[in-house]
Amino acid sequence: MKKQKQQTYGEVNQLGGVFVNGRPLPNAIRLRIVELAQLGIRPCDISRQLRVSHGCVSKILARYNETGSILPGAIGGSKPRVTTPNVVKNIREYKKGDPGIFAWEIRDRLLADGVCDKYNVPSVSSISRILRNKIGSLSQPGHYEGGGKQNPAQAGLPYNPIYPYPYPNAASPGGTKMGGPPGVSLSRAWPSAHTVSNILGIRAFMDPAAIASAEGYPPKMEDWGGVNRAPFPTGTDKPGLDADLKYSQQSSTLSTYACAYSPSNQYGVYGGPAGGYVTPGHHWQTQGTTLPHPGNGVAVHAGDLHPSVAFKHAARDEDRKPLSPLSKQQHAALSSIHGLGLPTSSS
DNA sequence: ATCGTAACGGTTGAC
DNA sequence: TAGTCAACCGTTACG
Image (cartoon, rainbow, N blue to C red; front, side, top):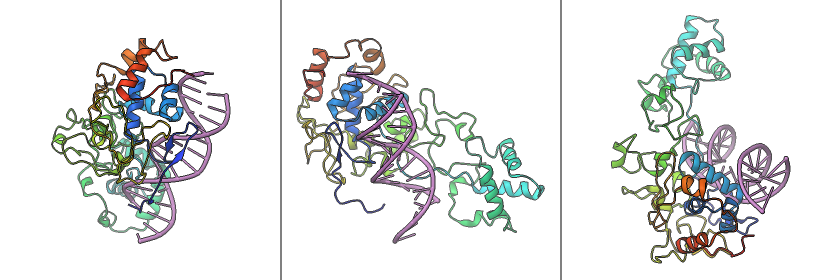
């Protein structure tokens, strides 16, 4: 990785909160956004309380509702290449069989022959480029394949995304069933390391073998360490939350909601300055709050958040009536659970 | 007043 | 090794 900035203290948003441009909010903050939403706190209040822009609150809650994950997506990297050796080989064969074939015809044939599906079929321009660069100048087959930099895992596959993300079901790579497992919608056509299960480290239903090695998914730093630059824990714990969601456990009531990146990250400090939950030197400590998600029951463990609060069912569907001002109960809940001092005035 | 979202500038990681 | 590209980020502004 490139050398990181020595110090990135972040910027201050309009609400007075500190953020690091381009970097995800700490998972702890993300978790708290979801927690507060589960308590029935309105997004606008969450925004003010946590000093996070309402747009961000909206995004995080929307993401959570959609995927069940509080975690940011994978930053960086590249999409899987579609011009795999196998695709090139097929294109070459098509071209050999019909030298006058058009790129769009090749594209159609790739689809028809099942070499590709609609999600990974190369564009016509890509095919043209392949014809021009890889095939037009090639005389002997195997040239491209012999490049040596291709992922050997692709060998033997009709086509395959280079990314070795596990698919929830075997049919997915074939593209006949995009969209992931029921209740989990992937926002991208290419498989993300941030499927709900991967993110939350709950993969048993799709890949039991992965449980043995907790980091079943590719250890992309961004997955978890991107927020806290601390390396992943290597145990069987959920890597991200344990790494990131470090509540102050000594304080049983979480009276100090310590929010600080680990010293190993480049941010140094993080948190709303006036919120008082910046505690440099403290780490988030795992607690194990459970955040039930309506879609798939995925839970985020992080401590003694009342596990009964359901995100949509209880908090949103019915109990959202007393939206603002906050009810006493909400204040009490927030104060006791999160140590947040909510302003008595809701405005 | 609230919320959804596009634009923006930034970071990151694969190539 | 450095540069490019395309992903994602949170904030901001707008409707």
